[in-house]
Amino acid sequence: MYFFTRIAVVSISAILLSSPSNPQTVFKDAGAAQSDIADTVNAFREALGPENGGAPANGDPDGLREIDWDDIPNTVADPNPIPGDFFNSNENPTALGIEFEATGTTDSFFVSANPNTGIETSFGFPTNLVPFSDFRMFTPGNGNTFDINFFNPADQTELALSAGIGFVFLDVEFVDQTQVTLFNREGKEIFSDFAEVTESAGFSFLGALFETPQISSASITLGSAFFTANNVAFTSLIEPVGDAVVVDNVIFGEPIPISAVPLPGGFWMLLAGLAIGVNLRKRAL
Image 1 (spheres, rainbow, N blue to C red):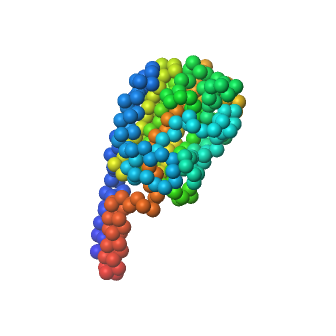
Image 2: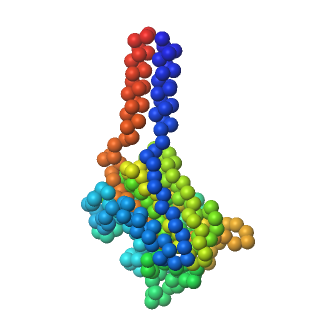
Image 3: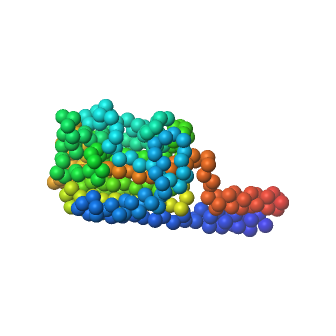
């Protein structure tokens, strides 16, 4: 009797743990001009919902938040680094509930300069790196990888989940190098894909949308080169020359406090199955 009960519990666990995540909708596009990807970017925005702005109070749970980098002050733009938690503040318009975390060799983050500031625009490559929304763009410094983590916009220490996130990438010229990987609250990978390639100075968009808030974090790899600290030259990771990719617009679903998002139904069924198994075992003994 004990042997039979144990097998039953293991079977229930295996079935529930292997259940797939809610299906996601993938938004991918690439082209030589902003207009080539604009419809896809707008479709992603529409799917997420209305713009919720940058105030700390949570807006429409089906809405979106967006970073276009263009309105940040010069004090946190090239040649000055921007803090990774700049958009996880308690003040409008930077209370967006998102943080950027350095990974690999990355040790800093930079946003490009606006014209007429005396600093070169587009990190010194204005003919290769053309902004999707004028004028600023984003890159990690001294590395080509970083993570993103979500927080409650109204409580900057409380972890949150988002239903979707999408990125406008600039100058993706090498296939299968610029990648987005998404993780759920348990740290399990729930999505991974590469951005589509474009010609030099082109535009690429990659986004994923889930039926419910599931995304706790994201890992991003930008091409196969990275900008050095002075943001004028870049260092290739492959020979003879790598692909230096930067980010413009980051669009994501309203971060929902993780405590307000129910665990998947299968999780509670699993616990119930385990509890039944334990009771049956006790009775058998």
